[in-house]
Length: 198
Image (cartoon, rainbow, N blue to C red):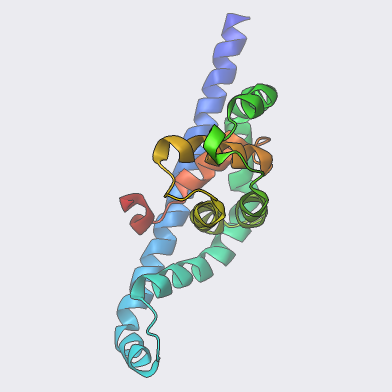
């Protein structure tokens, strides 16, 4: 029995390594194409900037270029990547799912922040749970954070100690519990260079 457990653990670790390797190659390839496009179009971008009443930042354009490149790359290889991640992180996903009911009870917003958070939960579902592209999920996490700040009915900004349990509460209510660990790993693998700086 111990040998079987070790073999299964080695298989899972192998799948996790392969998911990180393949995902990393896809991300690096998309980054290289994005850099080439941004370098090749720098003079055109400068011209566009001068013609816009509200100039678009270079980082915004770079993010959109990366997203456009990622769609055919990731969509074509999605089934292979998903299989590696889901099978590699099946045990952590199951353990989190088993603990979800007590987690929902434990991670209630602080007393002075207790509200239903309908807009934030809806934003998480629409921007993180539903999208297919990892880059969209990452952007969705950032946009959900902004919705939480807007929806907060307190008089001051949310402190980190208050914000974290609220965000966990919204993740659980937003339906990410079933594949929570896999979702985190997927986002980590496909984090863009500029996102890793934050």
